[in-house]
View 1 (cartoon, rainbow, N blue to C red):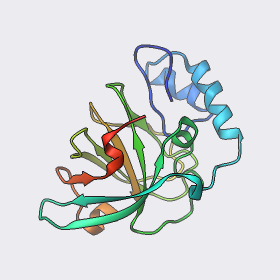
View 2 (view 1 turned 120 degrees about the horizontal axis):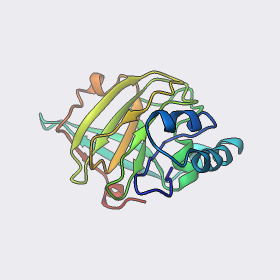
View 3 (view 1 turned 135 degrees about the vertical axis):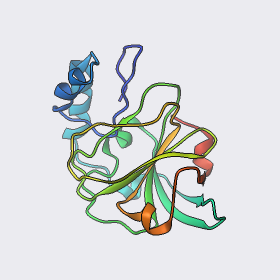
Length: 179
């Protein structure tokens, strides 16, 4: 979610608790962001089947390719919902979040039932960081590296299981544009 200030905070999910998180992080305009967030959370979740779906591949340093079927969070509402309330998903499924500009990106696990691996991707498609097995329901902010272009969320433990690591390349048509 974007604040109207020069320093922007992207959140994958949002809630009334956000108003307590932002001041602790040293950011203002919490009231405005919390109001927008409350609207996103009070409506019923959109079914994942309504999200755009596509294929994504990760080419590991060894040359091995791992394929995934992904949903893309292509609107602010879908960005806010993400994988909230999803209880389980296939090992070869994930959700892609795209970011434009140089604004800081933060993620969290509010209302996320299962552990997730968060794969941070730069504009060249290179994996720059992986936050593995993030704790369900946690309100801890997970900062992305500078110049993060996208975040891919996978079922917790998948990166370790498939050998996905920093420096690997993500191949997806969706990476060529950000919202």
